[in-house]
View: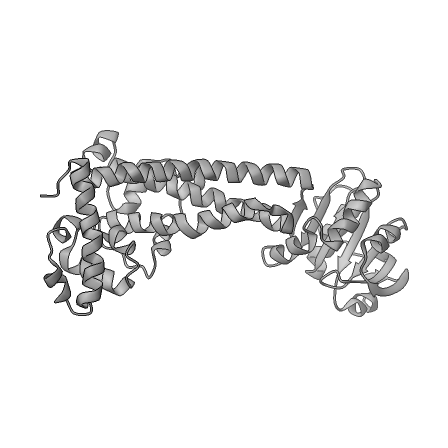
Length: 360
């Protein structure tokens, strides 16, 4: 189903011709069984499809609705753009097991396993649309339920995003006073990962909604285009050992194996960063110094230049005391990049003075 799901959701999104036809069928309290194939003749020859009527016409929602009034299944081409046959009998291998209840759903499930093709069943009794592909099943939700779930996920993601950026403001202040604790870093990473995970989880609803997703799609895109970069830079800044990633976003992969419900476990987050602590006191008493990756990344300099600087000066404390001439003398940096770095460091120093902190 995973390989077919994006295509299926596109075909079945609210407002699409196929979905319009199915919605009409559900509104009329009808049921239908639909088999999607390009090689229909193969299934006719093997008696899987026993002919009712050969149609072979372009798909239209109204036509699907009218054909659903007849007994038997409807055969369409793979992308649902043409109706090939109607009022057909579908014969499945009796040895294939199915846990589905109801003749229509049992036939759909068994035929999907047998053919490895998409089969859709609309239940008259349950008013549901079920898609079967191989052994997998996906139940399409109504437009109202989709809107509700999508808005819920995006709203939760927005709350975590706000909390994430509020904690970053605290981090900026703590970096100025050199009081960043492992507890603070783990909490920020936890909130950032939850923001990303919940936003990614809403993607299936966005695909199912299609063009009707509206502003939820824009918010989804904005979160995933900004938060992973900032979060990745923080992760790279505070890991116990220098990680090797080609981009900030790749740093999030360190936490891929942690289930979403476990991302609130700060000890687990700290462990993935390379620190083994077993108490809140241990997290709070471990003071960390940033590598300056996040600061340098904000300058939009090439990643190679950032790695060169960090490789030489190791952390932000050391880097804040470096002069323009020293930076310019480093191979691959030069005057222009040195000025960009110096400007970023000057802003950080001014923030330090404003916050009353010091890296000395």
